[in-house]
Length: 330
View: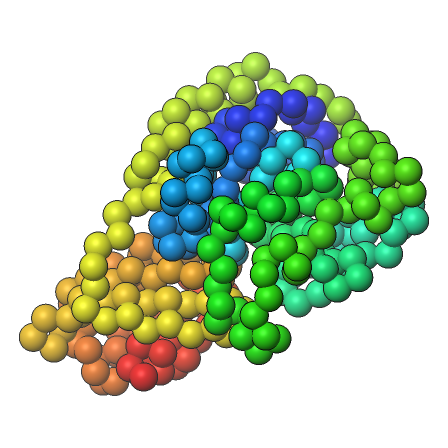
């Protein structure tokens, strides 16, 4: 495994670098680990409707970047008090690389500094019940990417301002402010060391698990590819926001595996267009599922016929065809 030393703080470049390395893992069968930081940024999940996840006036006023990532899951806030980590691996058994295993180095780094943290729910790390890290994964053809945020000394007031709260997600616990549900790591540490000390502690725990870890700057050709991809994709409105037209019908529900929000246009009893949003995870291109539903009769018979030919769980992990059909028809 190679540790790629990347000190750039442009989120468009950093997410492009992840994607370039993810693709090169297929070509060279290499594995990578990255630690990186971003200027103030909202990073939205692959399947989210960006305009519904951010506080647009605040984002504009503060000049905060908005960038979409490859993986699913929810929107997160980054600034220079936040440390991000990425593992890029080759695997034929992605179930062996679950969230618990891939976040162990973070938990171990905390323990080494005298703080007790742990994984709760689907993909969150907490200290004393408060979230300090959200994690997401992306898989494609034997390649596996796991990345996570770590709130070390972030501006939590700005975090609360820029992210829209999904009230449905928290109604079972009573709605609280975002600020009251999250925490930075730094106040829990003796002496409140700076983020570089935590970076070193995390890198040390990763070295313990991968003793052959090699430290390397990004290859110049990789950097060139990342800069080109940042310009052609991660800096564009189409990728980061995309079109979000009005729809006739909206069906949404929160499941254990995440929120699924289906929007449909129906004409003369047939689905003419479909968009699917949410903070779920999935391995397939959701556009394939959306396109496959176009032309389907908006009925149990029509949907069951179309969905019988589709593995819904490939696009929305944890969901089967029956659950999807029940959601759409409810």
